[in-house]
Length: 158
Image 1 (cartoon, helix red, strand yellow):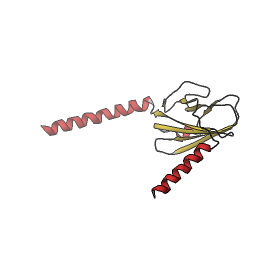
Image 2 (cartoon, rainbow, N blue to C red):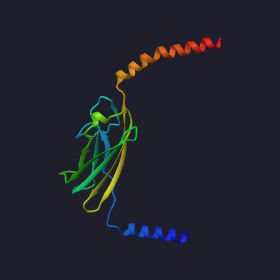
Image 3 (tube, rainbow, N blue to C red):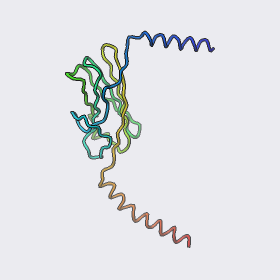
């Protein structure tokens, strides 16, 4: 049994060593506030414009990129780009952001593939927070409830 496992691992390592593909990470990979922006932004208000994923590819050339956006409920949305670009910078956003945005932590996982066989991946996250007015209304509505609970507990101890 152990000989089979060891021989399988050796074969996999040998194939990986001689595979023509090479791996490199993105030169830059972060969430920004708009297309064309290079400034990282990790917190978005619910009414803010759509977040963009900024990727700087390692090389110019014919490349395909794919991004999986996972919302706080673990639903996954997919976006991709293909083709050559005059530079290595790419910005991607969800086309239907207005209908899919949710409050909470979002995770974005992406990978790229060049026609030469080079590939890589990256992961990042950002948070969508509720609008300030909603939080204010929640606190205003919750304050009387909290006061009543405090009074009931205090009276029940006496």
